[in-house]
Image: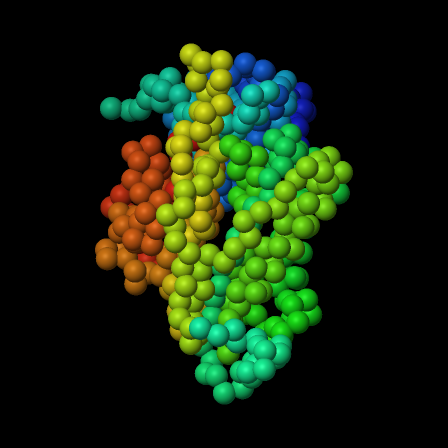
Length: 150
Length: 293
């Protein structure tokens, strides 16, 4: 299940939905990304998330498909919000279910690393001193590189 | 040179256009409304009490273009084939640029329609925002270009430098004054896309089939002041992303930005490289590195 939406999501609800009607799941790892009130500048008041509608859904589906190819998973729920968000708001949810915890931990980590470097989302931060587009981080690229197969 | 709206006795009259030949006419006009930075921020966030400001101003501009003949005494009523109104938000100097393009195949020019569209779109922006800011000022309403007709093509000189339309304020960790425009000065005249359809009838489908539809996203859109532009497939010397960049640069030198190493590109929504092959009708998006999650 992949969703790009402006509305907030409820982690508990997504967690329950992932497990609904099944008893073969041994582990669920849920990652939630939140809006910080500091980033490249202090006093971040909010941010706008833009995306490339159409390509976004495609890119997220590719990432989940790749995770399912690499690990044995029993379900993935991925939600990314767009539009205006304020500090403390949840931005992204990755919930991965598997029979064993290692697969769930690694697949969740992998999905976030690839999402950060491959899915067409852009953040613009609004601070007390003005607005600016968040620049890419080298550490995100390095994190994604860890999953490259030689 | 004589004024065409005055007859030999100096009286106002409407020019008889019955015998003029029909040509493809296009005019592009622009204007700007300055406001307080807080007003612009509220506008950008959709927080204005009267609702969606830009959507309303766009419709107002389009409606106004169609009714120009009712406002300007000696203007002919025209069956416009296209009116578009676009907005660029400039955070650097707290303003909104309004650009209008009008087009038709006909006997008279459409610059009055484009200028009217810009004027009324600016007035509507004022009306939509005046509850929070009465100091706004409208300025620089001007014709940028016109093509077709006996008097020939006109293109406003692009040499006049105006403050950056790009909003990319680059935070500087070492300075208290973190608000610095990254590119300094940038020409913000809109890019004329009319070349694409020269001589053809404005049926949207036919146009798009022979063009590459280019999108500029996020920070890149704001730096260029362009979100969508059609490039005729025949303008590409080679049918690749590299060829498309050259064709765009030929059209406007600002597109040299696309050569920056960090700018990424997708063809039909799939990540692509410089040598990816293109065919007519493809959608090509250029954008900066992604920052989601």
